Image 1: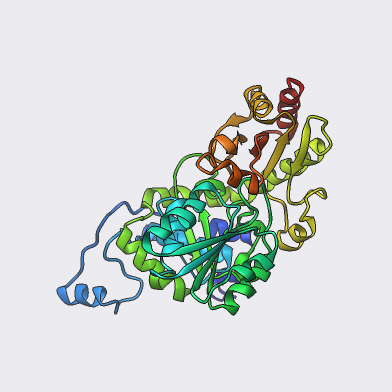
Image 2: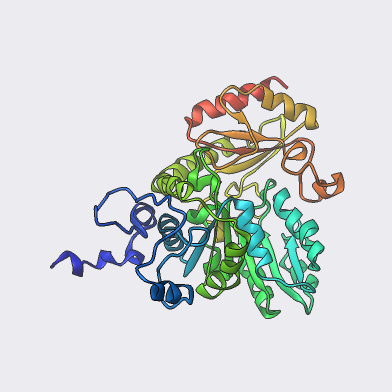
Length: 402
């Protein structure tokens, strides 16, 4: 049998690990092994007629300007779409650009958004502060109970936006239940899937319409570049979302796309190791006397453990620690650490800890912070690739200083 007839030529038959290495690859005439990096901004055309037909959209797969189409970015989009099980994808300059364009592309003045109140601070700003400036109102609900979404839906609700697990308190939202509610009202469900990653949670399979990522996190995972991506059906991605990308210019640079492709090659290895360590740390600290609680989706102490097991194949690399003694104790613990770094990033090869109340969620009122579990003593821990024994020893030392 020739290679051309090999069934593994169909990328949908490949495992996630193999897709992350080979998916979407398009080699030039030089047959390079690593993906080619196209740093050009524009393209030349063999004739004026060709240029006219290209701009009319009559020549599929061709490029006319790298603000909205570039061969290197194409490979990243295709590879991520294979992993996610999506029909199409678009890369963006940052995760916030991806979220903002995903939401804005689906609404018009006079529309309404329903969102879970437990969101990353920047995402909550988009829904609660930014969109009303353009005549789009919003309602924030406690996302742990799907009935709250049903009660908040209005005749003009066009978007439901959630993240699950939530940042930073790792609350869960039932994606399938909320998708059914959104679709019953003719609304689009957008899911920020950063914490779970595409390896451990598949929102599109559960009914979501669009999925967003900050590619800065686990996809790069090594603190090198910014990036974002939105995935979904061809209708949604190639329609208004592509128009917004084209007109707002929130484009992913080819160089950053190339770096993200290199990150994808090791993503499954990195996230698996980080998750292994997170599970060990959660179990070891679950009953520590200086912690009020350890929050980890796949630990049996999580109040939504059953949903986590049903919706996520593993608990991923993020957890939260609620330290007894409030903010002073949380600061003391963080400041005593030698291996784990204080940073507001996550999903990195290096373990990172942050105090959300004074960083990522600082702009919220104290009432709003407490509503979503951002207490003075809460720390968010992103577990990295260091030896789990070293990470645990570092945390135990910090706790001993309290």
